[in-house]
Image 1: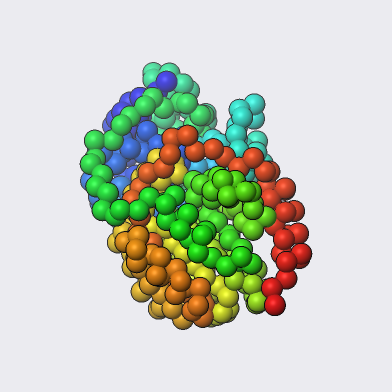
Image 2: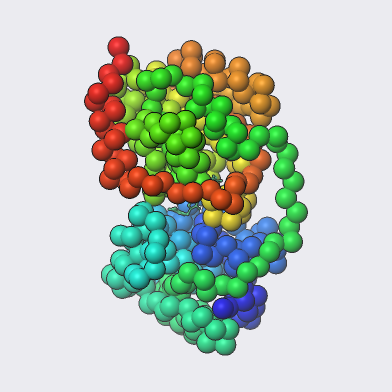
Length: 379
Ligand SMILES: Cc1ncc(C[n+]2csc(CCOP(=O)(O)OP(=O)(O)O)c2C)c(N)n1
């Protein structure tokens, strides 16, 4: 195993003082170490991976120093445009080191959403002309590879990458204190929402633990999985999936159950929701202020005022609640109100350690969901 400190020190020794990225569960120990040992101006948790690339570009332009960008391999898609049309050697030639968590590595058991991206990760980097190496799993070798790649980025003025296998980083527990400001857990809030929404309503739920909790909740309630589209991959896109459904089935109440990190990742879509203005579109953001699903790294969720943002984007109604009693009233109101309507629920972070994963495959989920949409047509 590789100690996060070893890689952090090695990169710092080479001049890597600026860290940015979107967190990943395989990198969570490294991310926690970076957070604990870097000040706010030198570590930015970005809205999405493309933004992280651009932040590293900005840092380089201002300082001449090579930034370090961490991401899950599923974020490569978000990063491709600024990697190719901004940082690439044929354009501005900006050096940076990418540290990529390798979900879905061939031969390693993983969730369905990683099984296509996993085997494509190294070929994709090759196609993108990004020199890359797999981080060895012992300290000394890992340092040597990290330093070599970092130096290569500097020398050749281009992005280079190290790819990190599952279990590479040794555990690290953050020393940062977390204060839970709000009484509700996500699971408790979710249960209240599912109990409150209409029989004929469908839910498009966001990537990560929220969808896993929703699946278990429906199971406990007798297995009405067909009403939920679990967006297991494609972080940040749930609201536009829901918009597509809401426009196509105007008589159906359509709920998007979003996360703060996911909402922030593609916040631009909110303006389009406001512009399209489907009355049946209801957006519930479960705001725990963190990327809970991949290790609890902070988001800007508690800084953002999603209620105000929604109004400014053209939503017809918006509210924020954190108190369980007020949530009940707010949910009754949301049902009656014309959409697009947003309800932000401020919750505390955390989830059950025994939380399961959906036992229906994505293809089964799609089939069940589509058949429900066709079978039960709201008047
Ligand atoms: C493009 C992309 N980047 C990163 C990830 C890894 N990832 C999965 S869930 C998640 C956190 C989502 O945070 P939030 O929406 O706040 O929900 P929470 O986990 O707190 O419930 C991340 C970063 C991903 N799946 N896709």
